[in-house]
Amino acid sequence: MLPSERLRDKLITLDGKGYTAYKTIAGEYRFPTFVLYIDHVQQDPFATPSLVRVRMDMAECQFPPHLWSNRVRKMALEDFITRQVHSAIRRFVKGHRGTGRSGMITVDVGGQEVLPRTSCLVHEDYVEVRLSMGLPGDGRRIQAKEAMAMFFEELPKIVEASLVYRNLDPRAAERHVNVVEDQEALREQLPERGLVAFVADDSVLPRESGVSDRPLRHSRVVRFTSPEELRCTLHAPNRGQISGMGIPRGVTLIVGGGYHGKSTLLQALQRAVYPHIPGDGREYVVTVRDAVKIRAEDGRRIEKVDISPFISNLPFGEDTTSFCTENASGSTSQAANIMEALEAGTSLLLMDEDTCATNFMIRDEMMQRLVPKEKEPITPFIDQVRRLYEEYGVSTILVMGGSGDYFEVADVVIMMDCYRARVVTAEAKRIASERQDRRVPEGPERLGPIRARVPLAEGFNPYRGKRVRVEAKGLRTLLFGREVIDLWALEQLVDESQTRAIGEVIVYALEKGYFDGESSLGEILDRIEEDIQTHGLEVISPWKGGHPGDYALPRRQEIAAAINRLRTLVVRQREARNPNQIL
Ligand code: ADP
Ligand code: MG
Image (cartoon, rainbow, N blue to C red; front, side, top):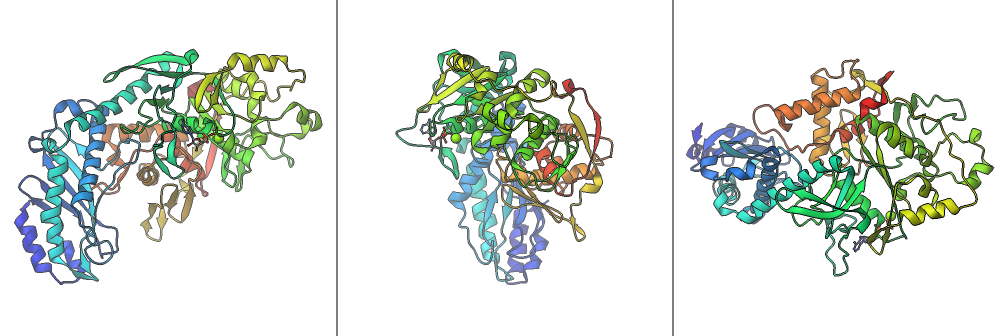
């Protein structure tokens, strides 16, 4: 390790030289209160920025141990520190200092959700943050003065303002950690209370706009209040008792007039698989961790999925127990999305009529009379939703304002009325029982076992030319070798760093030999999760030792979904498993 003066000396000699000479500054430097690691130096001012880390001894940072006393609190503190670094950068960094990305300093900060990420590491001996820096150049000439300002003025200010506990707002730190811990605790309590979701009283569910995930701030925001019938009280370790609406296991229907807040409630639930930051409005909205939003997704590819519980007897006698298509329809894509979610593991499906295929959801009595069952390949979801619960223990929460057919199969009916939730189960059941015409339930008696699929290594090629090329292009596009994986329908993918991580996870599993021709997708996901659990998220990084790159933890459901959307995927179907194994 060199003293920081040596970095200054090096930079002075580099002034005006060709940009690539910057590579001589790679290394470790001791600053008065921290160590700077320059792990990767960019090739030119337009290239991916240089990767650096800053490490400060815990003796210097002085974060009180209670803020990182368990896994969840540590993760929350890391997230908090990352956000502090982010705001310090905004305060202290001048930014543009020449060509391309010259002068920028960034940290990979999250949005409204709090996810485990590689941007910060709280260790018992130190705190480390991982940054990107655009080393300044004028064209391809090194601008040493500007670089010195970044390393010797801006960086120390950022570090001082965000890594030293006494310079932070202790109440904000405490609140951040406590709120995240409370959410995880509430989520843990759902199973023992027989619930799949919980929405606390006073939650603010609507968002600012279709493109902003911040809470709607408006005098007309209606805060959530639980209907008495579903009210329950959960215990949060920091905040104490929290009262709100518990949604029980089984089939739950959300009805109500258009524009009365149905989709807003469902969207809050689908995001509630993750904790939210204080002030988000959804801090105490929690859903079981493995909940999957299901929607229609026409145009997607499907590789040997058993969709026969929903679709059989296709016109040309195509096999639907091992269904393949390059271009799925609304209903086949929705069926595949369900079967794949079961395969990856889920205990709750979330659906919204706004994004479902109508012919997949309902087939009413008149249509049954006009089009006989023999002529209709689709067994509508309404006829399988109870079996999903009874055979597999998989619950469903469904928004359906357009058809009352679901009254019969629902355990609970919640009506959204001017953004207020009411329980209308009894009324809905009475209406269903009084009806004269009766639709006939259709479809197979049992769903039967879920078929496991074995993804084969030959289907994955992360190379473009001689190099592995795996890259996120925005939140919902993943470049994988020469393939473009389209993730537009994965509404529960919330952070581009998750997308990036999914790409690396697939490469990691390939390199580890997990796609061994025997293991099912579920077993491979188990192994990946185990590795991340044991070694941390950094285990997936292709950069060993130094700056790991910017990643946030994806769920296994989204990893599976990305693999399933890879257009070169090849799988072998395996013996049907006992359905109970998926529970
Ligand atoms: P639906 O699905 O029932 O048609 P939405 O959930 O899409 O209705 O909501 C319609 C509009 O109402 C959206 O613009 C949404 O932001 C707004 N909204 C939803 N819930 C609330 C609420 N609790 N308070 C104020 N506005 C809300
Ligand atoms: Mg809607």
